[in-house]
Image (cartoon, one colour):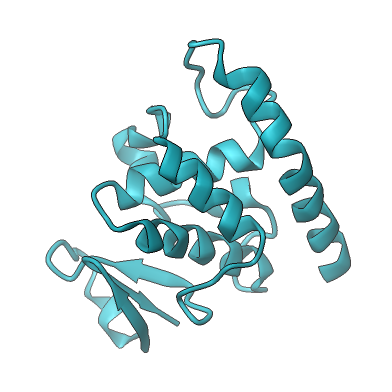
Length: 152
């Protein structure tokens, strides 16, 4: 099962830059749920929505949390499954995920998909100033980057 996930992620990393080059110049925005959206694009969109205004390494860290969840038996085994899991990411529910990501979010998505993990295996992240579900404070913090706490 893990080999299948690794193969899918590697394939996404190879095809993602080609898709960005082909799709990036069209100038049209599409809904992220439409057919043909790559995992790379989806990850860049969630990074943009969740880590807008954060330092670049914080964007990579948000992407790493998504990838850590893909590898964890506690979460769905696909990037889209993790991102669209009920109440997993605020940007899915407030519509920010439908906005075009900035170049740093694309670059951060590529790094996260390639295995970079500045969170030390975190499965969660939160901004303590905006927490609405206090169970998150029971999780062990692995690092703090910008306004986000990353936890296992």
